[in-house]
Amino acid sequence: MYTPKHFVETRVEALHGLIRAYPFATLVTHAADGLTANHLPFELVGEVLHGHVARGNELAQLDGAEVLLVFQGPDGYISPNWYPSKHETGREVPTWNYAVVHVHGRLRVIDDAAWLRRLLETLTDHHEAGQSQPWKISDAPDDHIEKSLRAIVGLEVAVDRIEGKFKLSQNHPARNRAGVIVGLRERDGDGDAELAAWMTQQEESKP
Image 1: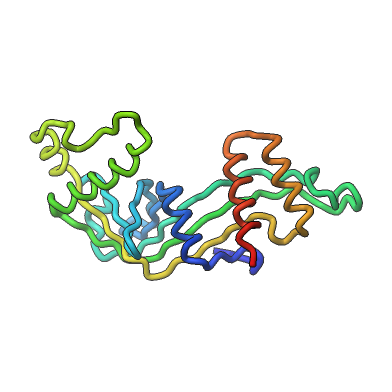
Image 2: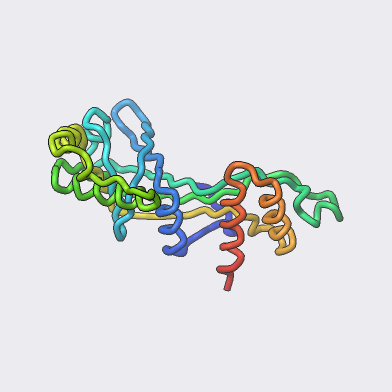
């Protein structure tokens, strides 16, 4: 991943924070027919990622394969009109701000019903937490759950290498960054509030 020094993010807490906030990953691997990409949620457990796929998915046959997981955070178009410096010099152009984390590792395929059930319980407990009446695995009939478990396999990826690129206007002076945050909040389009929040968090975390 091309990452100019302004945008390199190495803080483990920030990288893990993005994965937890945006757990739906693009998993890329090199199979017999070339590069393949699959899209699925992962749960970060320490330095290990857990997920699952249908048995018919090609990933179920790729135990030991080298993989890349891409976790995409908030993103959005940045107008040069938001930079105070643009109104003084005109020497600014549009860009796109975003935050991403890449995880490199090897795939481990797990065919263990008890492991899978624990994973599904963890995933549902996590993602149902905001519901007024959270759904639980035990809400479904046992025979249905057992049938569902037989149709999937688990995936585990130990993190061999992790890299982050948080492109949040760090190459601009503070007044331009503040202008972008205000512009995003005023535009308030899809994802703008999240991107503004990430930029604000980045500003507040500066030493």
